[in-house]
Image 1 (cartoon, rainbow, N blue to C red):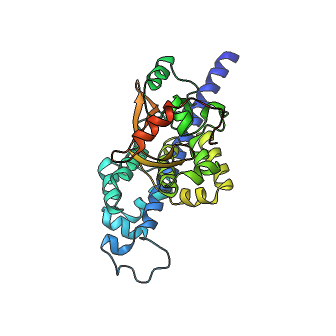
Image 2 (image 1 turned 120 degrees about the vertical axis):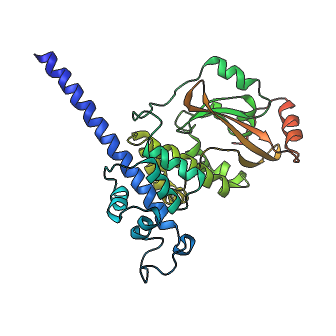
Image 3 (image 1 turned 90 degrees about the horizontal axis):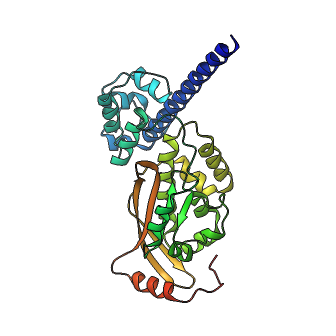
Length: 304
């Protein structure tokens, strides 16, 4: 009898967890819609004079509902995170009404119908030795990171040029924190503002898809408290999918290095892992400077 009760309890617990995670996902979906509505100006949507004087920025819910061809109550419930039946056609119509970018439309569809399991990832703590062998063969700085932006593997070039990952603790080896909290990056990344904004938008896309994950929630809350700039960027709720991005580093010993970070998402169907290569931008002296610097004998001095 006791065993049956315990089994029943486990089933009930699983149901509660599933319901809680679904509720979290719907809330994230609603928050995202609200953030995009408040960002969109009426004239951008072609409705400069509807509903009289405005007291708040962006569109009203009524205006979005009219543009999307749905009822005001229906759209309001979506923003409130309430469970309503929504077809793909309706979600896409709302995306068009809000003038979402291609990245934002993809994000909205993923929130509406998650491609991943609703169970939050536990994080990948290590990579296969074969993967380490691969990045060791790359002449440019290369790392393997996960959705949390935890750096799990790196080659010598990455350690010499990007950061001294070898000497960092696991807690320090989280890129989203490093870019905001490590003074070295703030002082030496020439396009810090552009790169930080992009990094927050990409991290936000992972955060929204991992609803209910305590690690993401705690990391964001702590970083928002420690960095006013991160908090400001986070509240914008900008979304970007991972793509080639510029990274211009004024290295103390190698000089100015201009990279394009190219990312291969998903290693052997593991969508939580990303293989990132810092490729010298064509037309700059980066290729030559990088090669010359890495061929020098190693010394004990570091830039960090």
